[in-house]
Length: 547
Image (cartoon, rainbow, N blue to C red; front, side, top):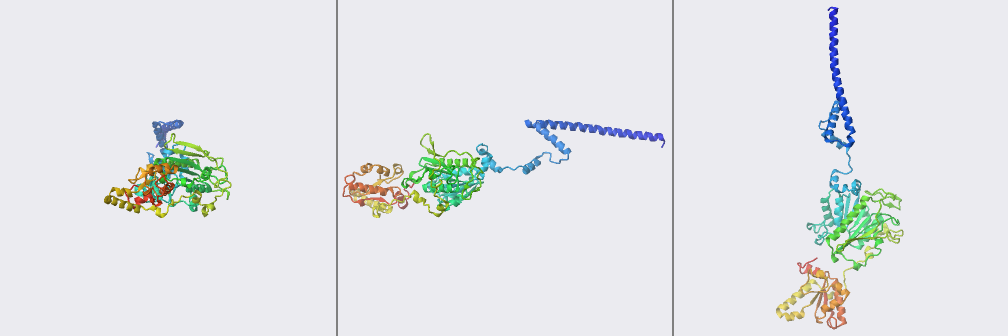
């Protein structure tokens, strides 16, 4: 090849290289423009992020980030769904379970509860002593609120007469343990809560061990003996106590031993003995079975117990201080709180409820701890040892009313014998005529209150309530003044207690002479039906109403 040809070939190669370089340069310039545009868009999107982005801009930003990521080698899915779920599973650690957010959401969004309050509820255990009219609604709302553990204490079984007010029980559970019946119903309401069954009556020997595993106690019992025992135990273990009672159409509520402090600490809340140093006379204590109870009344008081318990838990229960060991007793669910950081407590008060007054609620300010209280003062005589040893006789302290027994055996007639006597008199009426029958017929005096007499009574009975006889002799005198001195008087009541007292009163009036019959009247002609109308239903007439 000539020199000229060599030069021409070299020039051609250079031209081709220049053209290739120009093409590459144009491509690089295009890429540079595109990259600068994407960078500007990303900067603008970041600048507006804090002010919120419209949906279109959000999508645009995601596309920009995806394009940049793919150019950098990101191999994620184009829709991002799987990657986002993996991110959620790996990064999110919520303090409550998903079902808890859903279940408790309506109270979680309230500032009074919020997440912190719900976490305290979830870590707190509550003991409900008594699963009756008070305990049933209280346990229901505590379980619904999501406390960690609900303990249930009761040694009774479900009876038909419970069902109008004890709303955790049902007809098919008659005869079943109240604790088992309640736990079954509560589990169906909220299976996330732990339920502990104590199928026994509370006694001093087991109270300390039982209460020690719980953070808060609700007294839902109906007798002074149990109320004093529960309060004493809570003071010894430094547990807050929510106590309530209800009878007829009235109720009362107290939050006791709150804040929970050791005996002798004047900053602690008063106990039951501070409010009631001495129990009421035993004969004045009326049970629901004797005095009656309106279901919604006891329901209101039980719901209020649950409310007060929730308020105490959410505010934070201070840890108890053991003066003997000079250490804090760790209890699950209790708030780490010193005196400076402890939540402010409302002053102690007694809430009174009356369904038939307006307004139905009123509050009475309670005194602080008594300086001479047997349980919570510096001079307290009630100790753990005295409680568990049985040296504290709560029945003796409160007094127990034994069944009335003031009549001799021959002054009483059984329900069966009275039925036989009346059958014989009916035979005389049919065979000898009404004149003979009338002379031999007794007079039946029913000493129940009129409202009970109107429910059911013997056909020939006259009603003279024992409460009226106690107040004044005149109603009894008027009812019996025309009777013959030889006329038998049979007194009846619901259980055979008041009837004995009425028999003794009638005999006393007859001995005075001139008031009821003749002075020669034989005491044996005045008697009562042993066991009252309950025995009559049980032994003679099952169709006779029992209430």
